[in-house]
Length: 203
Image (cartoon, rainbow, N blue to C red; front, side, top):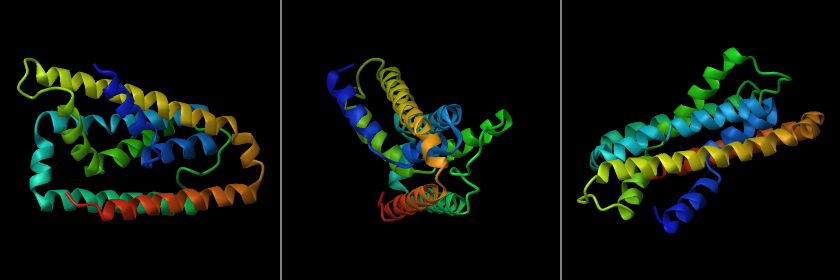
């Protein structure tokens, strides 16, 4: 494992994206534990993309414009759905003093869907992992899976830190309804913007 891999991974992970927004939203609206659960769901959504890249499925997705477009459309639709839920205060920014444990599986599933419905992740890992492991080297598959695992751990840790920060300022925010309204609008706009960006992505 090289320092270049760790630095590059860290830069990619800290860049604001759908997973970061989702985790921040839960930390801000529902507190620390909800943000950790959200971070876990988003991190698990990376796993299928790593597996796809390592085992060559991403190459098939890249070659098939129809498959790529189908997943992309689902991803865009889901991001717009998230934006609508935030605006109606029934989604990630639905403020609650406590989140019941039975709601945690739903938080995980939504976080998982946010990432698994983004075909750009498969393309990223297809281009990213082979730079650090030669596909023809002995044990290349295991090495790439190992690097993917490190990327996931890094993602989880960074997302948790984002979420805990949001949870730390939560009490100051939710006590001001007008501020919370603007936060909901900002998050909804960000989800829409990411959806538009994904819609304009080519295989």
